[in-house]
Length: 227
Image 1 (cartoon, one colour):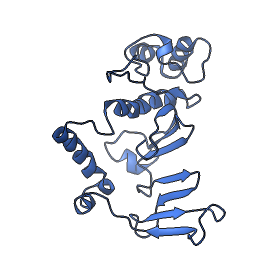
Image 2: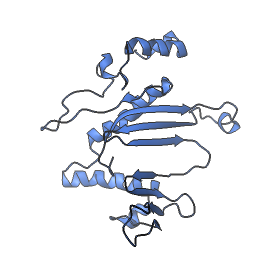
Image 3: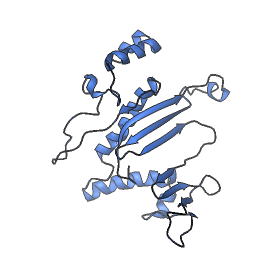
């Protein structure tokens, strides 16, 4: 969202379930699933894949494919290095096809490198404090925060349905006063099916969701979910 200034509009999600045959799982108190995958559609048509969980070969890797090249952090050696790839027919004369280098943070590099998650822990706190000191909204305000939160809520619904359909997760636009013009995107405020229907509109969304939950988890659990 920060790099492209876009927002998610729909999500499909899948879950790698808890493995009862894995002694590293059954031998601990952990009862969470192995991993989850989110496939997001952004408002400019781009696709974002997020794979997270307790997978073997732990690491934090980010890859960005653009119209003019590729950018990713290295997966071998120093993983804080950045790899940039440009197609030979799209680069400028004399410009290398591939470049690998170790970038510096433009602000507070020394402090950021001492924090966790590649400096992300530092800048989350830093921009929050700066917003209080300067009295201005940071880029990641409450509206963008809600947009990211909806990806998880609607992603969970998609995963329960087997990931068969993308679910809407776009929040409404703000008016000039800065307030939201509607509650579209918040599935907990209205019970209307229109507020939480899948992105591909189907017949009797409310009835089909109730049927799927009852068929898989039983009537009591379906009722408990307030479907």
